[in-house]
Length: 291
Picture 1: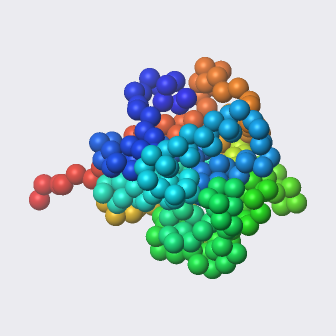
Picture 2 (picture 1 turned 90 degrees about the vertical axis):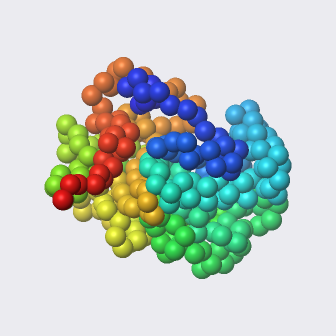
């Protein structure tokens, strides 16, 4: 929506294209509500029989079979590795909502079953949390997985645990950090906004617990006094990644079935400004200087 509102041309790239290595043709990749654990955002039990979920399950299973993979969980892990390779080769990745947390889990779950039985036909490894290999991921480490297939939460990476009623945290506001343009040009670009303090907004992944961040991760925004952060950034190989928690900056309580946000009603949205900041990444490439 942000790209269309800004008049920026883009392509939609799906799993088969990623597996085929076609991301190499692009400088910038945006992920949003994807679930890279292959569990259909853990909506399978709650929304059983819903046409949109039935279509999602059918499409993903067909794609996995076409690519010669045993399950949707295997498909999503393969896609996650393709995205990691894309960043390693110099690509710019920007992810929001579920895509942030589940991409990390999928990358860390090499050889570990982290998907519920309804997804791949086998139960999740009860010791999956202990077996995750976080050196394979971008941003997080040491997370504990949510084992219940009936709870639409993936791990304790999310400080708000949106769909875990006994642990759900209320929304507050998050504050953008200040950076020096001479020393930190990329973080400076990512936090450019006409507001320093923004109202928070939920997603299936709303925030990132600070104690789950790897050393060296740059925090771009957090909620003062809270144990979680909202907006983080880092480098991997020749490329960079940026994660923003939440689903829709102008629909804080977004629910399934809600109509898309009409951005013409929010032309100065500070939250969507952060999204568009990430499109500017190619302009921040370091250039060789004359000596």
